[in-house]
Length: 125
Image: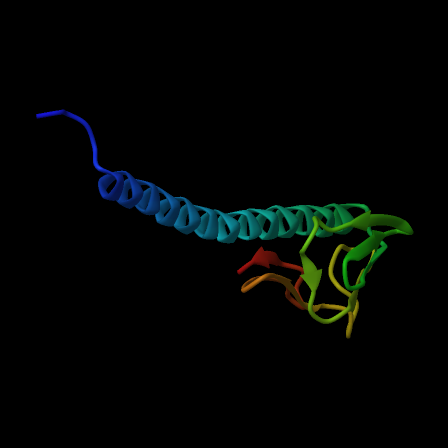
């Protein structure tokens, strides 16, 4: 009797490996979009807080870019602002009336919100 694997056993192993690799690739794509989204939210929250410190200042958010006092910044690939918004801080660091609100970011199926309250609190949800 010869030892070794039959053709069917070998094919089943390769099929199983292929299924596991495709499943892992699918799951990793979701992780990368969440990582990009989280990094963009932290970057924007940091720029908002810096804008409060350097007040008076204006931050204008477009679809995939935003500007801080005229300096343009690009969001990571695939991350987009759902609804453009302008945030303005007075010289005391609090937002001007009508210039505060929620910046919603979306990347694939994931989304995060950066909230600037009327009192000036910046938080990521």
